[in-house]
Amino acid sequence: MSEVIKTRRCPICHKLFVDDKYAPFCSKRCADVDLNHWFNGDYAVPSEDMDELDTEELSEALDNAEKDRK
Image 1 (tube, rainbow, N blue to C red):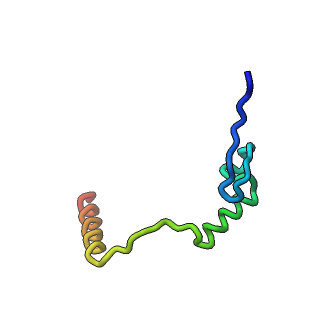
Image 2 (cartoon, one colour):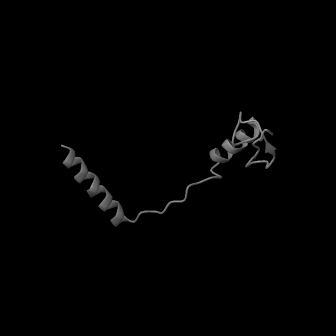
Image 3 (cartoon, rainbow, N blue to C red):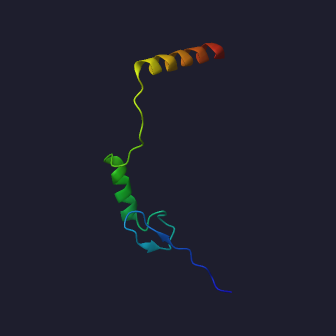
């Protein structure tokens, strides 16, 4: 039987690698580069601003939930 070697592609440098030590990255350097992207705000989760009416409705719903718990 032949052994299957699972390879992955690093999302930072796109190099193929086998070692899972820094997965999903190929090395500590690539993991640190990715972390730096997060720290610099290069990656972001999109969101929508809530208007005043939505904020008031949310506040009321939270108040009602708090009253129900008591």
